[in-house]
Image (tube, rainbow, N blue to C red; front, side):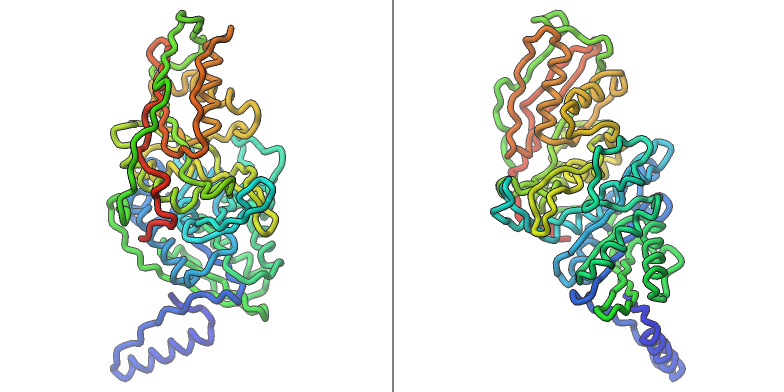
Length: 488
């Protein structure tokens, strides 16, 4: 890590040159101390993408992180918390809106920034109400991630929300209308000391630094070239208004294998449901196969990881206990699912959580899509986001059912879906209703709000008949998961 304050930097260079001239060994540049909480600190983390990455960190096929890239993210997140913030709590996290940066001919969303933001977020804490009236405060082990669209930045293939969430706005890769600068400007204008982390590809974070420097007149010596994935930059603004640029080298040296958790996750048996499965066959008991029904499809449905540590507490992100589940998902689903691709909702959508001490109760919906990212990485699978309809709308269940079960898009495909528990139950209800136009559809078991473990499987045959199996689960014991995140 090197400080770019010009007087100090010049003295170091001069001193080193004198020592070299005298035949002595050059002085090692000492790592600067962590940032001060008395300053307003803008911290910039460059996430990896196809354009800028270390060798072996990004899959050329899926544009997602590899096992090695995920290891680096875990190491860098721990370094950021310990060596940059000195284990102090973050004040704000802003990440790339994935659908604003589509990569490869298949147009895969860029999830790397959010995964980096998430591994850092679960090392922090936030206090929210845990009831629906804004009371009973509880401190949870995570921090909200801002990743939602501004009115200017909704991508062409994404349904624009009826209203926007300025408090949870993220970063737009194209920076339409200077939206990203507006986010930074809002932080600087508030002048609240602390730590504000921005995670996005190199082009985006560098432009943020350049614009902040130009607008505020800091006259900093900013980097011109991509420094690699181990470099973290910070603009530290003192109470006087003066600013300095500091860079940190995490020195992360990840291996090529999938990350090993520091301890095994606690296991459990599956909850017995009645019925364990239901089969629907056209022409039997009033069932009618729709003309556009998919065939030879398998859909595996799971819920996001643990997100409500007490009562209704929610910031639409999973907590540290859920990070254990998400990272263990590849092994937990081994032999229980075999998808060709993975889908979830757009993390830039937002919804209501519970009240923060600043009065915020709307947050970006990152929990479902981030739950399945480790599985995507471990299996090197294509990852897609549903962004063409509003998942919180009254019609979302029937729209989801039509999207996944009709039209042939997923015929002859096996899909893992990371969704929400209420919507999972509603989607199956809508599927049954579409086969029983005159009523008499089977009753769907209740998916408990305390259940993060179930794995429901929908299997279609070659004629559009299908079976829903409710009997399987991931086999991870929610109640026994550690309350703090795994340490790497």
